[in-house]
Length: 205
Image 1 (cartoon, rainbow, N blue to C red):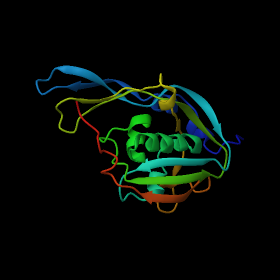
Image 2: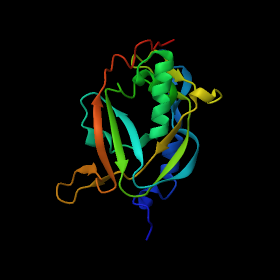
Image 3: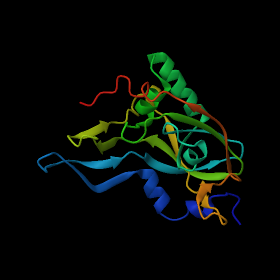
């Protein structure tokens, strides 16, 4: 029996593909129907298997007013050291932590307003994929083009590792609902953040 609580969910090729985050078959078109790019859903470059010990502190963003327990069911996280790098970057450039997250973790407004921040701790050893964030290309909300966030991993100060952790949610046998597996990860605290600060200065070009 594996010592990792999410070993079954980590197995197979699907978690690796999701961590890689590339959807090469999804085209972005302009109002005239011309293909102007392919959707790249971010992900991480060359995901590597990574082991998380019990007691590891993790951070994750979610939407404004979203329940922290719901936010924590999702797969994308950063470790405490990476979060401290976000804080340092935000302070150095006098921007919000949310905006720093958009820059270093490559999170366009189309994905999240970054209105809630969650801190959690692992209760059992977990498996994850770890790597540097990859470039993002997604359609704009107005469908007049694409949002492009190129990674900046060539700049050491902007190189930030992210985690893809499958299997944090499971089906409750009584309610039949998908719920956080609190036996393997626990939400310690959450903060309500200002979504406006997370887009201040963000421009569509």
